[in-house]
Image (cartoon, rainbow, N blue to C red; front, side, top):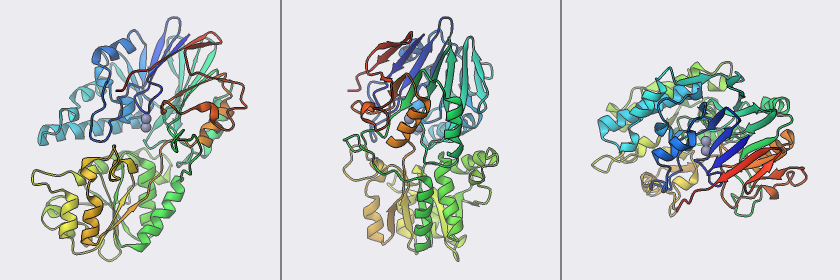
Length: 452
Ligand SMILES: [Zn+2]
Ligand SMILES: [Zn+2]
């Protein structure tokens, strides 16, 4: 058996291929994460993607973030691909929106997802799976195990073949909602693991390999609640495909007596409907109580009307997405109009990674420049409330100790992030694959690509 990891020593764009005697699978086909507004350099070319998947039985996706599905359009059309049902529905909605933006508003060519949509709708080659549904690819058996991440319907994969067991964690965390059963599941399913392929995004976040405090989604809920009590009118910027975060925001709004609102017909509205439909007993993901506000027309002319009338007495919490900051030809955005024309003071809360908006950061996005200045000028408040979608060091250690693998292959991490310094891993009798090696007849090949 051979496990080939492409780009394991970087955050995002990691691809894993598992080859057995007659069968093989590939996990994820994501693109390099961009740095700020700059496109990632040295991306895989269509031919590279075709070479990576050549002859494999299937390509499986852990979740819908771009650094995991971004290169799917280069996969040859006759290959078979697999996604979770909810994951596929959100991906499709996302692709439709982006393509519409490309067609109607002449957005960048990258927004054209016609190719991805055709692929997702190809019933013969694109398939879905359910949690714990066992998939067979020749002699390879794969069990998708639901994982908590900042994406809905994300998975880990347990791969069994030639008498070996491999667990691929994908992106995951243990400080989100509905994580209670996960460790129990892992203790049951993750026994006798030969190879653990695990993400290490949070390792070395402080540059020293030490644990940094990571707030849980529950702590965030409290923080949102207290924040909403302070101010009546609240706009929150967050990812519209992160069900946990939206649950924290709207549940806090509800508890604080503010109207939870969303633009009717927006992308976020479509995604909330998918979460609600697929909540399956997880009450936090049922967003049917959210007020859908008829949008745009009023926002353009009198920004106050659309929101403030609807939640005038009790106040409101409205989720906005990056589009709210998108400047038109006149240099105006929904945000600048709101700041300029609103007669009421409001609170702008950023619930995204601080690298996207902090002044002077290399990763800062153009659309978030001067947001703070404008808010200050007009007397509106700014607040940042956010936590990571990735496992903290102690939780990575926990997963390693439960699964007791013979070998750990770290992926989705900074090049200098070192797993051997993690407390709790040192004592384990396992090898951390840093170079090509052979463990119990499994050939491990680590391929790095120059990102410069
Ligand atoms: Zn990722
Ligand atoms: Zn992710």
